[in-house]
Length: 289
Image (cartoon, rainbow, N blue to C red; front, top):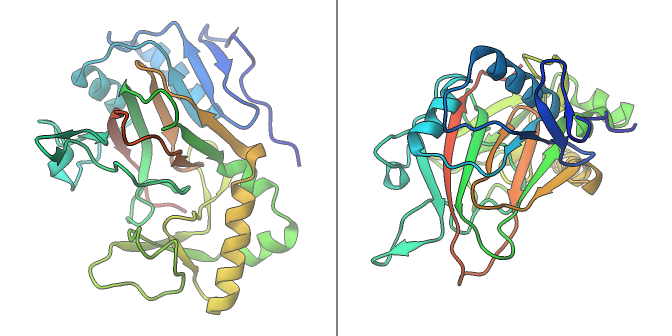
């Protein structure tokens, strides 16, 4: 099944929003919008619709303070408060993502992690709706972010696999050291975990998306362990098909937002000798159905 067409190159929408497609898989760049200034309701709704249509939206050449980024993110809903306060700024909703060390200590979270595809906070009852990253320092090579279209992944499954997933839930756990290496239903004490539909329906678009991921999904509930592992591995390979993936090469000043309800993401590697500093804000979501 072909992937649905996304936003055309540098074409204004009916409301006048100028966009450019980032790939055939997903993503649109929104052109000519300065997020350092408050934007009106009409323009904001055009941006929201573009985001729903394209899953990932990019704003290039932004010069944003922390307050600017927070203001824009709050338009989409309440912000998540980070439980890892060590890497937040004065605002507990703002997290630094970085490999930089000062006085021997990391200034940001995830210096080496999240190299496998995942959906943010899938192990919580109400996972993130949106994640928003702003690029402050980027390496010369690598440190890119891959995004996979979970709508396309579901829509291109064969009928037999769709039937096997119908009504099933997947168990997710926040256990980077074990979840992706050893599947099954055994979860270490104290590890956050939650079960959600393996196929979720987006509340705004009504489209179905495959909601499992290699980093944190450990089982399809109700199936024997061997069958669950086999099915999950097949799903991971399918959803990571390059035809469904856009790779974003960061530039300083990029503000990029993705929809965790219908996209997975992962990071590519980069040299430890280079610095990477991103500012992340997360918008709270709803319980998947």
